[in-house]
Amino acid sequence: MKNKTRNVIIYAFLTLWAIIVLFPFYWMILTSIKSYSSYNSEYVPKFIALSPTVENYVTAFTAVPLAKYFLNTIVFTVITTGMMLVVVVLSAFAFARLDFKGKDLLFSLFLSLMMIPNELVIITNFVTITNLNMRNTFSGLILPSVTSVFYIYLLKENFEQIPENLYKAAKVDGTSDFRYLFRVMIPISKPTIVTITILKVIECWNSYVWPRLITDDQNYFLVSNGIQEIRENGFGRENVPAMMAAVVVISVPLVVLFLVFRDKIMEGVARGGTKG
Image (cartoon, rainbow, N blue to C red; front, side, top):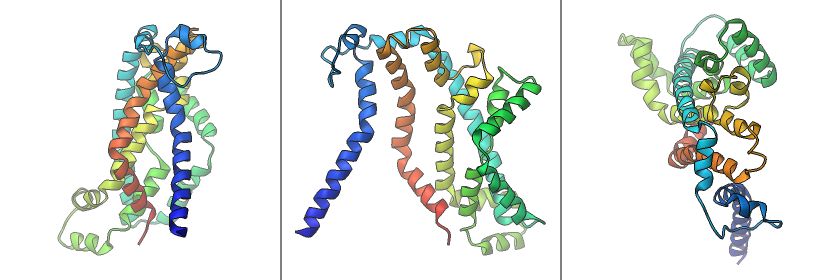
């Protein structure tokens, strides 16, 4: 009886928490299918749409070149994620398996970078990119985001779980470091690498501050900048349903990505955070 009562309390709490977490998404979708007139006539918000419409989605794509921003975001995300994976995998392998003088000290200094506030990094990156005349370019958008101390640390911990005897045996057989990395370490650490890839894709897709700071040319705007452009153009403060429609369109790819790979994300984080 006590176990049943405890389970009822636990599931009731989890259900309540799920409703709290999911309600903003429901409200976003609900607002996006309300007409402009019905939304503004609601003195008391209604939790259902009596006359749903898709007009707001059409408005979202016609008010700003949202399709072009989607393409820019895809290019930015794919290139940034690809370059980041090369840097992270090679760095993690070097810290996990290679022996060189000052490795531990260098890695400690590397980890200390995580304590630097992002605001200071953004200022430094902005000055550097501006001095290199790389504003309003994809290079200026991409280069500051091609590395991550946290991802290097996460993958390094995962690499170190692989028995070192495998590495020594491979070296005895004359296997090069790159061959060992691609034939042994990467396949074994695939869940963590998939997790890092997905998290980086989400990070790039949601980027706002840096793209907003480094670009003022519409040809390089991302989807997050498109939402802000809608507000600056005026109708974002008035036509809230249209803005919510744009947010829904932008959010759907990330939601689908997470739902498809959620097991991989959990598995990769668990493996990266458990050593031994």
